[in-house]
Length: 398
Image (cartoon, rainbow, N blue to C red; front, side, top):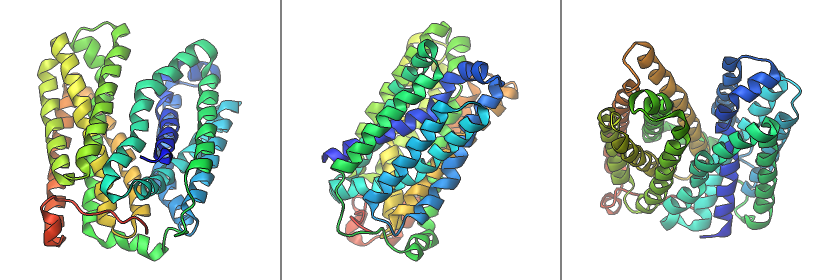
């Protein structure tokens, strides 16, 4: 695998750490900025909104620019936003820096996915995407806990500065290791938008949104489930989340291997397994040992589908995958927003801390239904030679 693919993975690690680490900095930020915890929580929502809205806009704006140049420009934008956050004298500047950094994420994930597939070749697209997006998994396993540790011992600004430094290293890596392709610009704006006339693209986006909502509906409320239902002490929660993260890492690697040859079966098995595991979690949560095992399996199932979800959108978009893959990142973030809201709603309704797992299972079933519709539509449209593996080659250039 080309070194540049791993450089893209490092970049995703930096971006993912920035996106998620605020949850571990809430008390320190609230105290230092003299704002409430809910106000600090809006920094997470503001970032997600920046990804959802800014990603497609910046992708369209950079369609006629060489991909390597686009990646460098987007990382410079990310570094600018991160630096603003580290230097922020108050809440408003910090929010502005978060939104600026978020603008780079959606477009970077979309363009970076296309570059990773180009470098690895269409036969290893799943592995390339798995390596690149393993950065998100590692961000949750190592980046977020490390950011929390730094915040507790050196202040929350130290967390921002360390991520900023790693982002600069990633920027240099892109500059030196990502080749400048002779094919130049991404393609026409009309072709990129025309991809959305294909209903299979929308079904693929719906699959991504529903599955992410299922994951975060349950994941967002694992801490009270561990302490109030399973009976773990609060000090064990970080270790249990590391178990979940380790499962996510294993699932991402496995999903990358199977997505190359069995894209749709990978989705069917992974989403179906996730729905089943979420149901089992409602029963297993009453025993500590079974909770640990189930959480690990939940991580494997949840992240085994991520490479296939991205590869599916790229495949259905045909010769114009850049905007579609960026929009898929937006779909992920919509799911990340809807899922916790649904999980919180069922808890507020008095259904208990296992209720988000039930709700997540239902969302996963809906996601499996969307994946099945996607498979039927693709089967009807694909040539006979592509039906046997339920896959189709992703174009190496737009």
